[in-house]
Image (tube, rainbow, N blue to C red):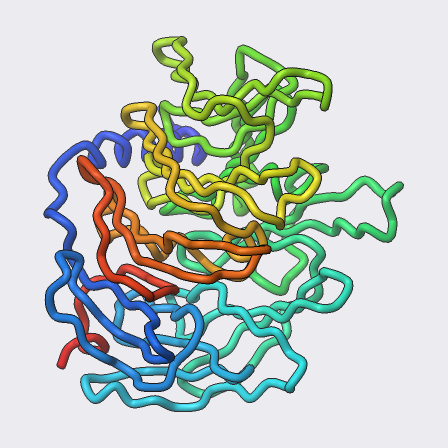
Length: 385
């Protein structure tokens, strides 16, 4: 019997979940970070600390093979490549530009970056890092969700200046109109299949899978309604109840549809925003704002492990930093078990001090003091002596 693409998609999720419980070498790869205005590299056990680029600021974006590194300095995008750590200028922005790197397009040379405008919207671009060619992908009021290899994305036509218009979510190649997916917002998108252009999203009491090419749609019914689902990695569903200001906080919950069991993961809160997930969708970074009406303000960052229904409170952070300005999916170790993060000391939403810590083992481990903007990569010529 021939299976639909969505059925195969769900089977792949089950296989990846099973494999994620298997062997994972203990903290492989290297961690790149910024310290005193320099881009540095260190092993996860604290050895081999060295400077890669003496003058580099802000988050670094590693290519999928780890041979190239992009970073922003003074509204300019630079590329680091080769064993000599050669630095070349890719893009010269304007003085008032706010440039933030997004992710690489895996199957071709290039990566995505964006500029935020005064009204909160964002212009997104694709730059070819070999030829320096730039493609304008359009203006958006919500951040599109890229597929794992950057070949596809889903985006919405939501416009806050037209609140009466019911927004639609579309999917296709970045910059193209694509095909209609559903009525709603990008915040309802849960993620992509790793091997096909199939996107997962939720509406009310259902989780959907939609394959962009065949347009096949699969529906998974939830045993509850009026909830917000923030992550789905079979067989685990992370969700919270939609509550009013007068209701008591319901907390973040983990539901296993196979065993029909539910567990509390984070207590005493009402709003939870997924920031990043590992490739197996078994570990997630979740931001909990201090105020429900200010998701880009201060809040708490959590590490959630759906394999054992546990959560670890990591640090105070700022919603705009973790949701818009940084791509924390690159902070997971290559095997997806560990996560490197900045433990911040904030004062009036300003960062006074930052330390690098690793979570995912039996206990959290401090890596280095007075450093920031970490990413975790596999060893490559771009990080070797």
